[in-house]
Amino acid sequence: MEKATIFELFIFGLPSVLFVSMELPHKISNLFPLILTWLTLQIAMLKNSCRLAVKNMKHWMMPEKAKTSLVTFPSSAEIVSEPLGVVLVISAWNYPFLLSLDPIVGAIAAGNAIVLKPSEIAPATSLLLARLVAEYLDSSCIKVVEGAVPETAALLEQKWDKILYTGNGRVARIVMAAAAKHLTPVVMELGGKCPVIVDSDINLQVATRRIIAGKWGCNNGQACISPDYIITMKDYAQKLIDSFKCELERFYGKNPLESKDLSRIVNSNHFARLSKLLDEDKVSSKIVHGGERDKENLKITPTILLDVPRDSLIMNEEIFGPLLPVFLVDKVEDSFDVINSGTKPLAAYLFTNKKKLKEKFVATVSAGGLVINDTTVHLAEPTLPFGGVGDSGMGAYHGKFSFDAFSHKKAVLYRGFACDAFVRYPPYTRGKLGLLRALFDGSILGIIRALLGWSKA
Image (cartoon, rainbow, N blue to C red; front, side):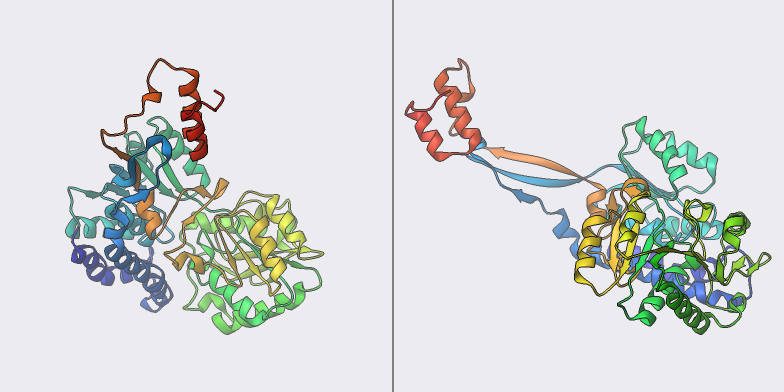
């Protein structure tokens, strides 16, 4: 694919994106927050992915030299990347442009043909993708299939060389079951309850702002790597809550429902789901900030809940919205047990200045990615793999990891006709067996001893 072609997709698509990214009609002034989100988190990141692939594609495609051993001497070896074939990308609704096209950049770089299935929950963006891809990309190699469950089910009945799915665990199990029928490998980008550990020896204002940016600044909590809950010490919790209240008012005003910087909930079903989490008897009394709702405009203010019970709904399913529970522990080290008692998250965050605590966090917590003293920013680093582990997903992409995800690493060994080792052919004597053992051990001294008949078979 020519360099200009994929860039045109973003350049000419940008004006349309800005006006269809909200999936329900609103006043144009209310579009500004999401326009900024699209510009910074989707358009800019996609352009960076394209630039990185164009710049490094030749290097990524070059065969990788591999060492050989005495067993195949004389020989040389290399690892050759080849396209998998025809791949299916099923994307999500919360960042429908980025999550649709970013994997495709790697799939194109690796030489695959692609079918993209955008999310039907973001229908305007799905329509835009179908139009732009057909207009600017090679339609013989890249197709967009729109639709809902029937269309997705029909796609999953086909045999693919790889499937990349972004979404929730329930649908992921359906995708995996369909892929298993054809022995199709999968990359699963799911989610989970991403924890934030907050220690006491920190710059509290900076920490609070970075948590707010990762939670409410990223689609009002509707992001797979958004902070899901906070863990902090009992004697530090009130200080943390007070800092949140101060910074949230500074960012979103005294009436956040009127803020132009707060995204709405994607649809009425998700609004009802979040309301159910908030209205549970054991949870509703725990609200210490926010909780206001506007059902007509599908908006929920940033909501903080203190000391929420472990057995509540909000602590046992991914929130994916603007609700942030604060869980209390006696000492910060207890946080690791809380995290490890649940499923492995897509991301985990720690705010501390203690070196040993950072080291223990990295060594103890298993997650798709870890960030220390910030949230969500690892997503923007193309040199880091983005992916989950356990219930939060499998496989990874971004940058070269996208190229590798859609490539087969083919092993190639080159030999000539010289030095045809007699030991590999029958009849197998004790001397031959001793020489074979020395060859596999890689011992020059052992080979000499075997040739002189001094080794034991």
